[in-house]
Amino acid sequence: MTTLTERYVGDVVRRLPEKQRGDIAAELTVAISDMIDARTDAGQPLPDAERAALIELGEPRALAGKYRDRPQYLIGPELFPDYLRLVQLLASIVLPVIAVVIVAVKLLENAPISSVLGSAIGVTFETAVQLVFWVTLVFAIIERSGRQEDVIEHEDWDPNSLPDPAGATTISRGEAVSGIAFLLIAIGFLFWQHLRSPFSTLDDARVPILDPELWNGWMQVIIAVLVLSLVIEVAKLVRGRWDYPLAIANTAANVAFLAIVGWLASSDDLINPDLLATIADRAQWDSVPTINPWLIILVIAVIAIWDSAEGLRKARAA
Image 1 (spheres, rainbow, N blue to C red):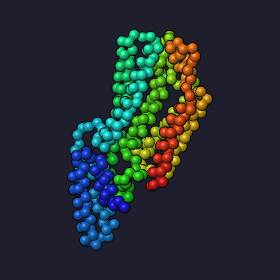
Image 2: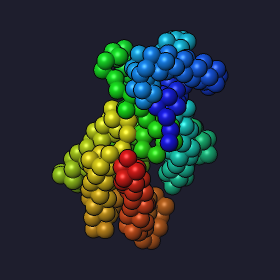
Image 3: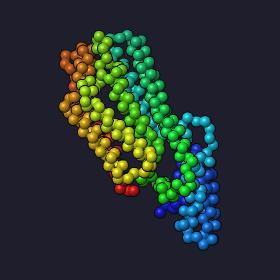
C-alpha cells in the first residue's frame, strides 16, 4: 500500500526539473516525518497526524511552485517532455507524408526536378512551422492557465485527492494536453484539406481530399464529435484521474466517430472521387484507382478500441 506521504512527495517532485527531484524528495520526506512525529508525540493518531501534516504543507502544486526556480519559460518542465514527444511524433508522421504527396503531385504534373524539390521543401517547411506553432500555442495556454492552481488554499485541498504514483488510474497533464493538441490539429486539417488542398486539376483548381458533399451535413457531425472528444480531453485535464463517467463518455465519442467515418467509408462517401480522378488524369492512367474502405475502417477501429479499453480498464482500477 502506498502511503499518503509517498503519494504526496511523488506528486510534488514530478512537477520539478529532473535535477531537483532527488534532493527535494529526500528533504520533503524527512520534513513530513518530523511533522508527523511531533503530532504523534502529542497524542494524535498516526493516520490523523499524517493527514494534518500534509494539509499544513498544502496542495502539491503550490508547494512545488515554492521549490521550483521560476525562469521565464514558455512551457515548463512538467509539460515540456510531453510537448517535445508530441511535436516529434507529429513531425515524423505528417512532414514525410506531406513531402511525398507534394513530390507525387508535381511529378504527375511533369514539373521539372527543381520545381518538384522547391515545392516539396517549401510546403513541408510551411507545414512544420504551422505544426510547431499550433502545438506550442496549445501547450503554452495550458501552462499559463495551470499557474492559477498554484494558489489553492490549504483548507480547499484534501490529501485523499493525491494521485497514485504507480499511474494505474491517473491522467497526466501531458497526456491530456497532447490529446487536446491532436484534436485541434485534426479539426484544423478538415478545414485545411477543403480550402488549401495540395491537389489540383490541370486547370489549377484545388481538389479537396475528402468529399466536398460532406459539408452539406456529415462534416458538421464529424466536427461535433471531435469537439465532444475535445471536451472530454479537457475534462481529463481538470479531473486528473479516470472514473466510469469519463471512461464511458470517452468510449461513446470513439464509437460515434468510428460509426460515422466507417459508414461514410463503406458507402464511398468519404474520399473525394474527383481526387482519385485527378490523380488518374495527371498520371495518364486508363482507369481511376480505388481505395479499400476497410483499411480506413480497420485503422480507426484499432485506435478507437485501444483508447476505449484503456480508459475503461483504468476506470475499473479506480
